[in-house]
Amino acid sequence: MSLDVSPALLEQAERGEVDEAEFVDCVRTSLPYAWEMISSLVAQLKVDGGNFADNQTPPPDEQARGQLLRALASDAIRGALQRHFGVRLAFQNCHRVAVFPLDASVDDTLARFTSVRSQVLNQSPEFRDC
Image (tube, rainbow, N blue to C red; front, side, top):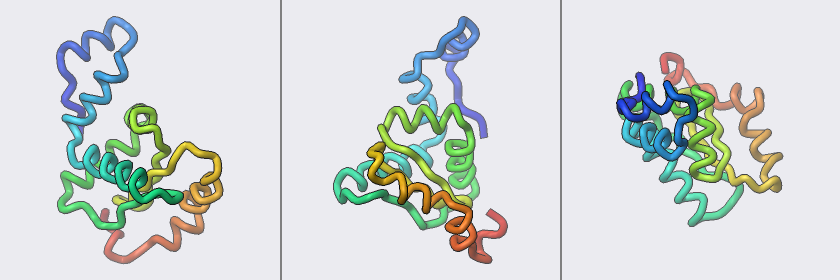
């Protein structure tokens, strides 16, 4: 899945620097499922507080799953989203997205969430083809 890059954004990239706000808007419009997932988790974290907010519900279809993979597998997209929302993103399997505050007090929780142990414990037969 590719981003829907406008001619103006492409021209910026060809000239040199890209305005990050315009890039983030491109991500928002190109990957609406991923955008909504992340923005809703950020809102949940702000309302509920705590160390993190996460989603454990698989995407409704392969297109949505592809959007999550695209958003979180690309360093540029993931980094832009983290800066835009002011959070750290974590990802397990093909759908478990989590948002963590930038606060260093949750570093241990983030480390546990992203550990090899947690990845292994989060496996399930129904996720084998995701």
